[in-house]
Length: 170
Image 1 (cartoon, rainbow, N blue to C red):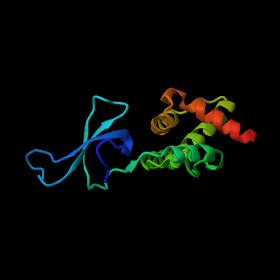
Image 2: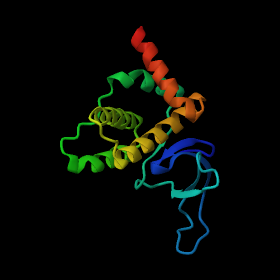
Image 3: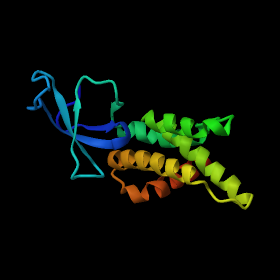
Image 4: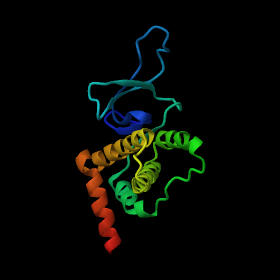
């Protein structure tokens, strides 16, 4: 169970702060059931109520600073997604983004970056689907790393690239 003030990753809503743990005073809702009141970090005006005891949506604590550093340092060793059939491409992207696993987000970012480069080399544009899932994975990953590392989200891609290049040079 998370505590008031904790930062968590909540499904496709991304990084959220636990603002409260409360019951809901609504008709048809069990009065003894506890709910988290979440505030998404990128949509401060939004509120999410979700049962404390729910397994429908992935909820996990954000990475620690050490875990974030370890993740970034391991990026060169993280493999791209293996998608044998284009018919299953979007389903694999969805599954990977929904996992709420930072390593999976890195996998999809690497996959889509490599795919984008290959398509550009062939004189083709990136597909709208690829762009959509790349933005989702980057948004999720960069939001979490930004919070944990204290670096503005807009600077995360540059920070990660610089750190990976520095490690490769050692």
